[in-house]
Length: 92
Image 1 (cartoon, rainbow, N blue to C red):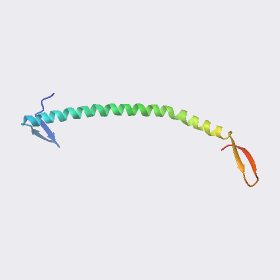
Image 2 (cartoon, rainbow, N blue to C red; image 1 turned 45 degrees about the vertical axis):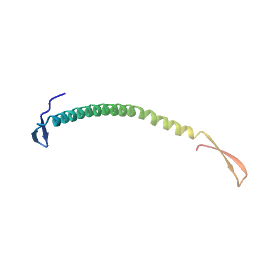
Image 3 (tube, one colour; image 1 turned 90 degrees about the horizontal axis):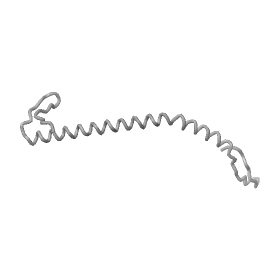
């Protein structure tokens, strides 16, 4: 743990003379550094996820086109009550 004895608040440097205050400042510094490490890791994970999604998107779009084309070939069975008959048509 570093010995922090000064703090810069909005451009003004102050000496920290109280040992407890110095310890609190040191602890805050360590917490901030750990948070920075976690944020960097999260950013890396998010970038990886975005890259994977970007690579997958063209396949998804292609599959959607294929599915939409296949839907047009699926028979639709319905009942026409006014003519009392079953009707079979292509597509959705």
